Length: 88
Image (cartoon, rainbow, N blue to C red; front, side, top):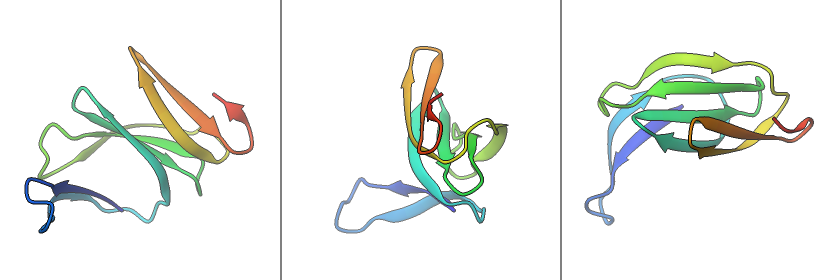
């Protein structure tokens, strides 16, 4: 799954939102109110709207990767490092 934690008190982290899934996420990047998650098992990049931290919602997916392990955002692009297929 995917969790959003309140870190205002590092000694007592609390979950403020979550997105329930059976996916195995390897990497997460957040930019512009969206979270981009790399699901290594299904080969999918998932995009969640996290503008409301209490209730992240799915807004899109990309299924062209084989085993995404890393994500980096620059401008209007998301770069995906794929274990089997290189940089996408």
